[in-house]
Image (cartoon, rainbow, N blue to C red; front, side, top):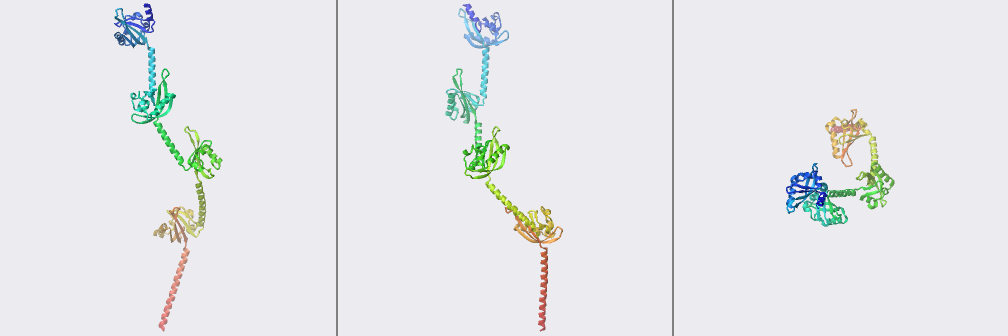
Length: 535
């Protein structure tokens, strides 16, 4: 029996040792010898505690076993003779002698180094996994099949405003504005295994409503049974704001496109219409649905020219003022000025052509009128210039309001002796006037009268280039532009020196005749008086 019992002790994978109440080793098995590196003779009779890195803790374990009758899973670190340290799980119970008195303890020290290493790895893995969960920007939580929250990360705490204790054990649906919708999301996850982009609105402790994108999947326990769901709720307030701003921008941009007076359209790179505005529909008489998907060129009287316009845009990047004639459903033709440019997608690749076709029918009509008026004006101007230059008897001079000479005809050259090249552009024309008229202010007075009344006339002494003076009859008219604003003067004068000389001769002759007549009358009076006195 003793041999049998000893065989059991020696075959144990645990290091077995008996310790008496004085804490001295009384027996060991071969595993204890191997673990410590000491011979059995060295171990027996030595203090149990001396073989551990924490002697007092080892001694306390023995005392606890003696006092309580047993200890279990009491961790110690055994230090071998070589210095090697082995983590052991110490389990011990008391044994008694034949009289029933406690004789000591039987302790089993199992090497749990590998187990500790696995536990450490497990702890590291758990810490790592937890750190991933806690570092997530999403609010993460686990929910059991009853819809009760079983775990949360710190982001859930921050987002909801509730602490971990308040959240764990509470109903998942209680934190959303639409509890039914939240519950349906949980049920759908359990039924299908996952949900994605399930939109909910989380209501925080402070009452703030936060739009979240809810993504969830079931997880299973070690037996393969569904243990619950892991849900990720991402705060997409910014995304919602961006989407709202994008929608507003799109509505605003579309509004600008639709309110444009030009017919706007986009085509792909082969000339097929991909979008149009209302004005394009109005000009063509076709609906948006009828236009989109059809060739751009078919709505113009010259399809090949229209197609060539698209090709030019694609090769050059833009075209401007490309004239085409657009043909409506009712046959009405509209002359348009086609301006277009290419546009790219978000990836930078060429997407097509954006074109604006402006109705220039009225503009063309007005342009024709203007051309006709310009031709008429040119003809009139030429006619007036012919008159101006052929009027050699009259001096015709045009000035602006500052007195600069703008026109000088042949008659002015003949009368004053200055050429047009000498006078046009000249500001100071005082050389044409006598010093007496200038000092008396007669020249300025004439122009002032013309400015106020529109015209003025007078007779002046004028000075030729060679210094000779001549008498001129001067008429001044105020010039106005199309808006009626005064812009200058036209001065027309004629040399009346000979006329004035003839008038002077006639005046003198009349005076002589009057004097002779007076003398005859006086002679007749004297004769009458004489005859009267003689009688």
